Image 1 (cartoon, chains in turn orange, brown):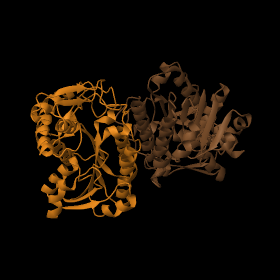
Image 2 (tube, chains in turn purple, cyan; image 1 turned 90 degrees about the vertical axis):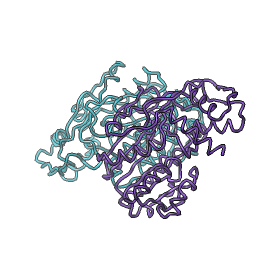
Image 3 (cartoon, helix red, strand yellow; image 1 turned 180 degrees about the vertical axis):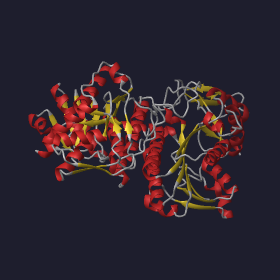
Image 4 (cartoon, chains in turn brown, blue; image 1 turned 45 degrees about the horizontal axis):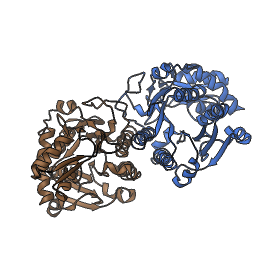
Amino acid sequence: MRALVTGGAGFIGSHLIDRLVARGDKVSVVDNLSSGVIEFIQGHIDSGAVTFHNADLKDLNGLIPLMDGIDMVYHLAANPDIRLGTKITDTDLNEGTIATYNVLEAMRLAGVGKIAFASSSVVYGEGAPMPTPEDHGPCLPISLYGASKQAGEGLIGSWVGTFGLQAWIFRFANIIGERGTHGVIFDFIHKLKADPSRLEVLGNGLQEKSYMEVGDCVDAILHVIQNTDDNINLYNLGSNDTCSVRNIAAIVIKETGCDGASIEYTGGDRGWAGDIPKAMLAINRLKKLGFKVNYDSEEAVAYTTRVLIKEIMG
Amino acid sequence: MRALVTGGAGFIGSHLIDRLVARGDKVSVVDNLSSGVIEFIQGHIDSGAVTFHNADLKDLNGLIPLMDGIDMVYHLAANPDIRLGTKITDTDLNEGTIATYNVLEAMRLAGVGKIAFASSSVVYGEGAPMPTPEDHGPCLPISLYGASKQAGEGLIGSWVGTFGLQAWIFRFANIIGERGTHGVIFDFIHKLKADPSRLEVLGNGLQEKSYMEVGDCVDAILHVIQNTDDNINLYNLGSNDTCSVRNIAAIVIKETGCDGASIEYTGGDRGWAGDIPKAMLAINRLKKLGFKVNYDSEEAVAYTTRVLIKEIMG
């Protein structure tokens, strides 16, 4: 199997590549290193298991030759900073929607038949029932990141319906773990590193979301692909429960040893405009395929906190 | 009320403008005349009720000054040819998704607070229950046109959630009537005009969809906007029943007087890759607001056939 992973030098991409290489796939990586970190996959590049292309998905013509001989594309590349859309409105359009169009068009022109796509729980928008099943509707995302993920899903659907592509769409909960480069735990550790006496928390801390450990996430991706074969296969990926931001703050303070730190809430029910305060995905479909999630949300948070403290604090 | 109508020189846009002008709105039109017809609104331009801007939505900078002083945008502009996506893959991306981004961004920069958007029943994709309610999910469109409409909905949702826009999204059934510039009735009349002895029908003719007369459509748009006030308001617009393509062929043959014409089906269950063979929207939400649809599907088809025969055959 020859795989191409977009965003392969990123947080989730590099974990997926660990699995693909371990099972013997030949892997090409396309990453512009805007948020990816080459060190995450340097070992695989050195061993010859991974071919790295420093290329930008916004360049369709540059992408087409990289599709040559590829059996399956794992399209994970995206702007990872959801909050950015509140200030710069064309990042998610360019790095998300248009990049996904380019991936699909390059695949069509090169005759590549299968794609897996990293979508997100944020496509469900606000006010969805919890836990949210895959067939919830209508989906009206409230962040520009969410809009780009939904647009990517729609583009993939249209390539399936019009050009015979086969696709797996994964709507991710908050994915956390080793090599994390963004997100609430990452932010909290950096804040406490800068000032161990206080921790600023965006919102009132009552935000409550489902967290999935990145190893669980990439195992689930490969499990679903191996056990499904519809033209289009849509799966939520998450864990069995949620963890509040207050709880995360307490865990990070404890694990960093900053026991005296004061927690300062900025207030309001959400971290920023476009943030969804409460989110939990229904994962019955995933479980029906025989997949077992290893980490519950709080366990994933505690584990991630410990590994990120090592990575960030040294 | 100062309104800006994108695609205002088009089929649906020009009917909407008739209503807006009649109730005393000042109307600006943005249209690049790629499929719009200036004659449709020339009377309103001459009377001074409509200001026409021959501008392209792909040019964001050109759009911003046109938003000055506007209260409400009716965003109807799009590539009207759904089939085109099977051959040229970037038309719907550029004329649909990116154009909608530009409209929203220009509104944000100019401080325009309200938008109505022409979405489509094709966002529901294939296999949805019939009649299809607004809360059906997941929505995975199978045409590139459908993908661009879904992307537009998501962008609007994100502008509502992030920047405080107020929005009305309308998912249209097949809208037909006077000044129609595309679609099955338009095509059939043109075919019979070219050769009255035979009529080629794409697919097996068993395709069956809901048709709404364009006057009903624009009345429904204005009725919904007047009677709803949520941050985001989502409504299916359609009629109470469906009409098959075989039935449409029979009506067009009868009305054109081409009684001896042989009907030749190209075969298969759909007209083209990405076509949805059967579609009917649930319009309970629309009815709950007290709106009454004047034309059933077959009546709308018969009426449209008669007026288009006059327009096309002269």
